[in-house]
Amino acid sequence: MFRPAAVEDSIVHIQSLSKIYFVNQQEAGAKATVHGIFRRKKTPVQAVDEISFNMAPGEIVGFLGPNGAGKTTTLKMLSGLLYPTSGTVTVLGHIPWKREKTFLRQITLVMGQRNQLVWDIPAIHSFELNRVIYRIPPDDYQSILKELTDLLELGPLLTKPVRNLSLGERMKCEIAAALLHRPQVVFLDEPTIGLDVTMQRRIRSFIAEYNKRFGATVLMTSHYMADVEALCKRVVVIHHGRLLFDGELALLLQRFTSHKTIIIQLSECQADLKVYGEVLACEDGRYTLRVPKAETARITERLLADLPVVDLLVEDPPIEEVIDRAFTEWNK
Image 1 (tube, rainbow, N blue to C red):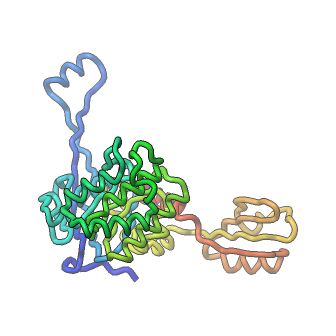
Image 2: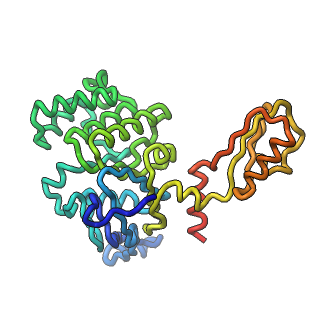
């Protein structure tokens, strides 16, 4: 069962963290435009609203929420790129926005929609630049580079100009560049965005292996629920900047799942299965039914007794559906 890490045992400690942006507002029309030159109207926007949670050493935590929930803003504050409006944060015992060298050498932030590699030169040259910035000894650098190259299958990519790499190839190089100094805390913001299914799987496998080998603590946002299911036992969910859930992924699924899916393969087609539940799909004698969770056992027994069942599978609904349901209920 999930138990929050105590403050003294936490690698990441967040207490009542808030961030407010002030956005310029201007009405349409020439008069409003002239007026706005001399007196701008600013509206406060609460991007993060007093969230609190801790992370223990070696945890991989999924940080979930819809677009605009405050996930990226939170990661930027944790990595020292933004100052908070209020609240306290420590990462590895450091206050991130002080940007101390000992702190920066132990963390990294990977953003799927941002480039750190120089576009017109081979990735290996950007790696060498990072080696100098982080003052990695040459022997250690070669050892780490070989390990990352093997894990991510980078060999033929290192000498190509970054502009000639595909999105998936570039993302692998971006991740390698961010991990050359072997950070103990890794913040990942949509690391698999835009990648095909095969490349997503490879990136997930690499993250899991890096966590296993080096005991790194990982906080990861993703819109691909396969990332979360594969890597995260615990999830933190925020919406409109507020923390809504912090706990085991299994508990989130249980809390917001009111039904199960039954998939049956019949030896012959049936005219109508609506008497057993909502029919979601039917093809070549394979039926997918949605049934109330409390009725699953009884309906399964009926199906086996009444129909020529060749195969039967009971599943929870996809996690995407559960998250959508959770947001819908929280918005009520």
